[in-house]
Length: 212
Image (cartoon, rainbow, N blue to C red):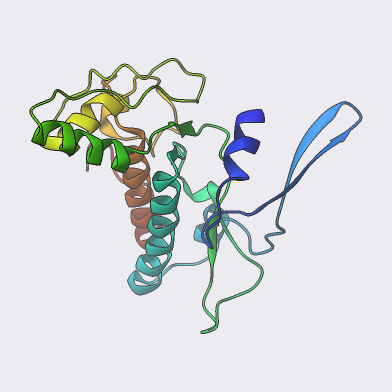
């Protein structure tokens, strides 16, 4: 909970649940956030079908919110229908606004991936070698930097250094690398999770195993 509080209180985006306070009662600690009265997408999918247009709009909101999280060095690591909740109020056009909730499994790195890539670009340009992001603050001890580097250059170097091993997430939503027990980049796993959410909204079912 301490990590979730530290993360959520630093994030400010319309598609991310807003932190309010931390409360304690009868020996239990509670994370207090803004009130969201619209229900989660898992419940909504069970009640009605979503059009492709509305599904894409909701996915775009999630990707926008995740981009802000990733820019702050935070990866959610449990993007799923149940962790996307509709706000009580709609936007100016009367459309549903969704919020990403529950950052209890998040990965928090001191140097955001994009910043690490930019720094690596500078090192590559000057003939220096790549390096890690200085470690992360998620307590997993899994930032081993031994993932598949992919493309070379600043992004490839940063991506390789950013890979982790801890298998975190909900079955059905996790990326293929986690299923296979290989190192993965948490930020990329978030984007994969949005893809699963989008599929579920349109199809009203989870994607078949091995589809993506």
